[in-house]
Length: 146
Image (tube, rainbow, N blue to C red; front, side, top):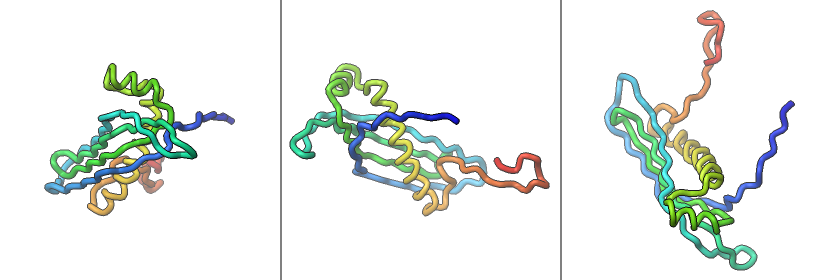
């Protein structure tokens, strides 16, 4: 029995500004699927949540590519992060987020963007951007879940 303790997320919201999906040529051979996440901005904002509160708006770009030239998806948007003093200082100095914030935001975005990518891939009749397990016959192999 393992008990995992999770910290409270400082992410208080997100939105997509742009979602684009393009299907190119069909491929009979191997298709390589790559997902790339890039943090493109971090800006301090003031929002109204039971009074005025300073937050950080973190801009992102998430790209799923099906190679060679089979398809691509681009998602752009923003994550609203609650505690931003160190974030802005680090961003202005190094153009990156503090490590703990970077990990939290990227894990959040991979989950959200890949979920949307799965839905889009179904509509475009493409393979899922993340592999799902599938069941094989016991007769074909001893290991029937791949």
